[in-house]
Image (cartoon, rainbow, N blue to C red; front, side, top):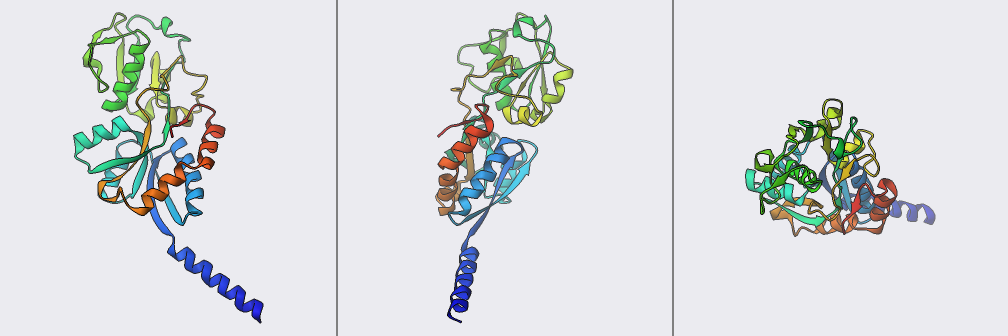
Length: 259
């Protein structure tokens, strides 16, 4: 009888503890961000935080959903993109922690080196201002185009001052860039979409972004929530050794922990 009473008490205590667990909704894009957040969810559960993961297929909706209160946090974007969204759309969002870096790459099915890019060739880039500028700066780093000194990060095709090969830049939705490889000479693709398309960001690019580029991804929340206790728990869970080991093992350098 005593054992039954103790067992019942243990179940009641467990149920009470489970009921006390706080639940938050975190938005991510498909691929690495979703995979990493699943591992974060495991760690957070041991700290009394239940994470409901909502997956999005583009870069536009997660910030709107966060601003509207449909999400408590999101983890899918780098700091320059968030800064641009806040400036352009007036979102009251802030970053609370750095997460990972995805070095962007230039891929091609038609050429093995950018030296082989034909006169008047076409390179596809993301159509949002931040990632589009990021892609163009990679092309510029390869010596194919030039911008004026001090042009900054948010450059577009109209800002190019030298284009000796007369390259055409096709601006497409970031998720469509891998599919464009059959139709263009090269495509500058975000790592998460490259991985979803079965590309290997470690070996397939014909050129790759410097890992020290200023495009580290972040966790974003509404400014009013930045000091909430659950935010601290979310950050601690993400920055845990378990998550760092998972990133290193799962992605083998294609995604790099930035903390």
